[in-house]
Amino acid sequence: MSLLTHFGTNYFSLTDILCTEERLSCKVEITLPRLGFLDLSSESEDLKPGTKLELPLWLAQPLNVSRDPVISIDIPKTYKEGYREILLADACTVILNKWNPYYYELGMYLKKFNNRDCEMIIDSLLLTFRSRFRLIMDWAQNPTADPTLNNLLPRLERELFVSGRRAKQQLEEWLKKGSNVIETSQSAVNLKKRKRTDYEFN
Image (cartoon, rainbow, N blue to C red):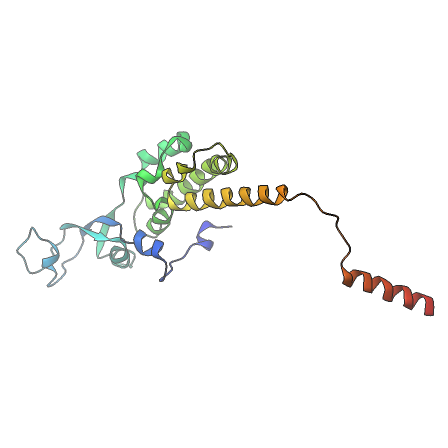
């Protein structure tokens, strides 16, 4: 099943808002009339082709994914080939939160851009997540693990870590209560009596 099937924008999500505020390096491909004020280093009234500027992802995306892109984008370095090779070599040694606290979410957005590197991002995200998932669950199930480990994880992994640790604590609390005698429910008893009565009459 495609990872994209389960990912979509959420207008009311703070995570989504913060993620799409990421600023991307962009280059203007066509003349944009009366938008020269966006380039503080230029006195021109218009934005000229070749002008470089930074735009938030939420603004850069619609300008890039059209049939005739208004701008081209340079993806963040942590998603480029050199960094993908680091993850491929040993993703578990990387502190992804330092790369980007919304590493997975931002990567899913970048997949939609017109950029050669973007085509490789999804495979890299999947391999990275698979490599790190077992480690995260081991940390969550290990009572001696440092609880501040979640501060080293990007948002998605941190939620898994916290959820796994909470489930572990709930299981331990349930086991401490001890086992009680399991009794047949009253509805099952009544059903059994009804069947017995029907059998006797027949």
